Image (cartoon, rainbow, N blue to C red; front, side):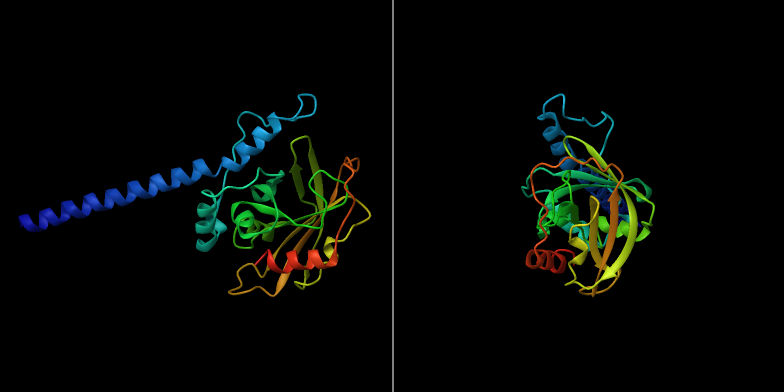
Length: 239
């Protein structure tokens, strides 16, 4: 009898230890998940006072892993230990509770840690068609619930630009026409489709939105959408 009582106590202690480890891991992830937004806030603080728009004091970068695949959760946690440049902007879609840093480029580190600015398109805050890519089993899985008419905010260190979703289209991976300049300042979000496809997804899910504030500043960077560069990014960066 003593033997079984001892086993029960050991199992209880082991169970409590596992719970403690799980809680500690979740707290650790929650703290580190704010790192990119904090760096963005610091970048804002370095701007001239008359130009910088500060985040409200209670702003927090919150993550909802409920839609994510296990692979993407692990990739995100590993990315927190690696160095990356400060975010260019923060993308928000309040309808689907998405708030995510926009990093430069679409390599694996950028797309595990946030979403990436597609090379060959204008940068956030500039006039033109801004291309942003994300993983379908990570941050951009929330795009499945976005609809025409929804509002998207893109906040840079100096201003917040607002876009309204016009249409959602499916294209082949080598179709980079969606990244070409449009008649109005635009935002194009790119991810793979279908969202729950096993393996390399055969299509790209495109959310196209137009600016509601047409007076976006131009910083002297010309609109550029090279077919070769755009094709590489659209095919390789959103698996």
